[in-house]
Length: 97
Image (cartoon, rainbow, N blue to C red; front, side, top):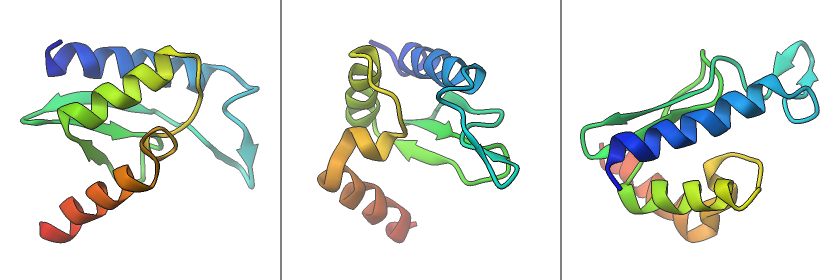
């Protein structure tokens, strides 16, 4: 599967989350998902859950793992799908930049 297709399918899940008030809880006037999006960007899939927050850059393998987790009916952000090892890989990428 190409990165653009993976990003597009993740994007569809994020928009579904954003539109569902049971999933997109508002606490202290802040939504869990706000203008969430996912796009293919170079070698990565960029994912953002809240418009004014940072963007996560997932490798193709991590994006595929996250998409499979979402397709299985799970709800949440990528770090829930990737677990501890995924977080360590993501942190290493951020530190290396």
